[in-house]
Image (tube, rainbow, N blue to C red):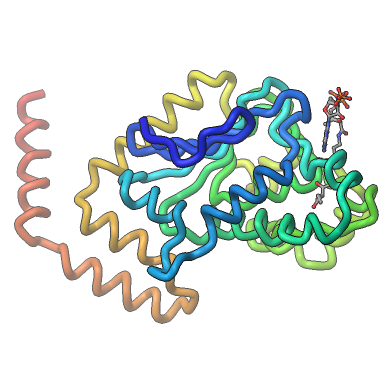
Length: 272
Ligand SMILES: CC[C@@H](C(=O)O)C(=O)SCCNC(=O)CCNC(=O)[C@H](O)C(C)(C)COP(=O)(O)OP(=O)(O)OC[C@H]1O[C@@H](n2cnc3c(N)ncnc32)[C@H](O)[C@@H]1OP(=O)(O)O
C-alpha cells in the first residue's frame, strides 16, 4: 500500500492497482473542509511537467481504477463545511471552490475509470463530488442525493449541474435548474431509473469483491489494448472516434497475441 494523502479525515492510497480516495470525518459527516480543499489544490494542479502529483501517483502506482468512498457509516458527504465557511471571510476561502472543482475535474478527465461507492446520502457539494466519477455503485437503499445548495443561497459550483445533463440525457439544463431550485431529493429508485447509479449491492463485501473482480479483468487485458481503449475518451467527435476504433481493431486483429489467446481458449475448452 502506498499513500499520497495521509490524514485522519481524508486519505488517498493505492493498493492492488486501485486508488482509494476515502472521506473519514465523522464529526462533520464528511463535510469538505478548507484543509481538504487545500490538499486537493496541491495534488491536482499541474506542475511544469504538465502532470499533477495526483496524476503522477496514479501512473507510478499503475492504478486501473479510482474509488471514492466514505469510511463513515450512514453518510457519503454532507457537502461544503458550513461551519468553516460561516467563520471565514471570502478572501480566506478564495481557493476553496476552484480546488474542489479541479479535484472533480481530475476524477472525470483522467484516463482511468473512477467510481463513487454510495453507502449513505450526499448533500449539496457532496452530490457534486459523487457525480464527478464515471460510475456510482450503491450499497443498501439509503444513498439519496439532496440538492440543498439553494437553501444556502448559492447554485452548485463544482461541476455537478453540467454532469447531471451529461449523465442523464433526459435532464436538459432547464430540468437540472428546476431540480436544484426545488431543493429536490433523488432516491435510489430514481437514480437507478436515470442511470445515475450503475449497480446496486446489498452489502459492502459484495461491492468490494465486484471492484476487485473488475480491476482483475482490466489487469488481464494486454497493456497496449488497455491503453488504446482508454485513449478513446480523448475523442469528442463520433466520426473521428469511429475511425480510431477501426484502426485500433485492425492493429490487433489476427496478430500473434490474438491467435495465441484464441488457441489457449480452445485448448482450455477441450480440457473441460
Ligand atoms: C459551498 C458548498 C456548498 C455547495 O457547493 O454545494 C454546499 O455543499 S452547501 C452544504 C450542503 N450540505 C447540507 O445541506 C447538509 C447539512 N447537514 C445536514 O443537513 C445534517 O447535518 C445531516 C448531514 C443530514 C446529518 O444530520 P444528523 O445525522 O442529524 O447529524 P447532525 O446534523 O447533528 O450533524 C452531526 C455533526 O456534523 C456536523 N455537520 C453536518 N453537516 C455539516 C457540514 N456540511 N459542514 C460542517 N459540519 C457539518 C454538524 O454540525 C454536527 O456537528 P456537532 O453539532 O458538532 O455535533
